Image 1 (cartoon, rainbow, N blue to C red):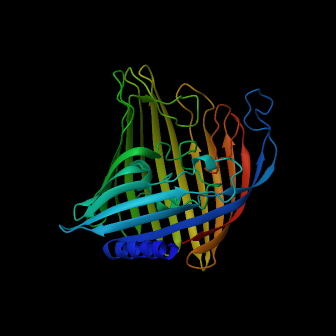
Image 2 (tube, helix red, strand yellow):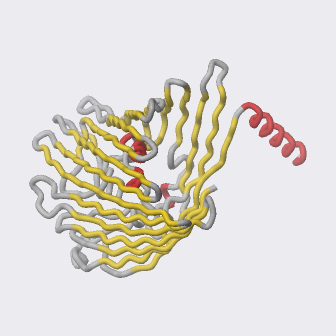
Image 3 (cartoon, rainbow, N blue to C red):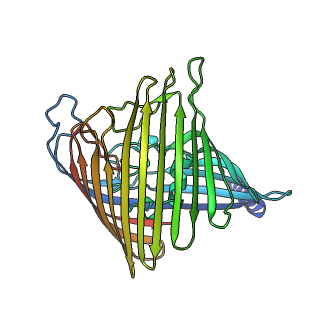
Length: 362
């Protein structure tokens, strides 16, 4: 009986393989992270960090991806992706979010006109950034990362649950991405988010811009984290960034400026940030240094900060590498920016973060 079942499964898989291409890929990424914070805010009743230095094993973005495509009779391909998060070291207790389909999970059509898809995925503000400033976008790991809703750059770039996405074909280096993130809808508000990005690149240069508008939504201007919530009375959160990148031989240089506006329907408050990064490749070594600065929110003094990240990787093979990073993160009195690994800080608290880790792709 078991042999019959096994043969049936094998036959079904063989039949599927004939008609469609399925690929399993992914990445295992983990590191030892040492954190050394100062004592600002540690005596508060609402303190999130007690100021203790810690050494922890912290996952850096491990994932497994199932993807497939089917050539259609009338041309083009039906494309699907199912990507899942898992953790090799989880001190920040993120495992509860590592459900089936926790990362990009979508279906779409790719043809001469471009690539359209819908499902759960990164919005265009996030996904297109690698075409604008790849040196900055290529942060070595989560512990040293500066991009995300709790970080200092690309602050409204996120993975949303209901996304309609389109990217154009490449026209002599020119390209554009657009996305619509479907939000809550009631009689009081219609909380959708729209993103658009355009860029140009060749073998040496990249340049581009991205824009995001979250209608009928708000985010607390006293919080460093961008957390969108539905709202009425004309509230919205908008952001734009412009960037450029140059690559010459083994050197890379990236620049980005970003402006974020929180409008609660009564008052509009802006906050600016900028980033610069330089990279260098030497044999099997890669070096990256990045500096990011965030200014104050309008009407809220001492709400900015800055971050310096240094890192080096050594390639063990085409798919495996080891690395070391150092990050100096400084928060002003009313700021609580952090890195992407999950480390939490109090308002005004600064921290030094060191990591040594490994990454292997498959």
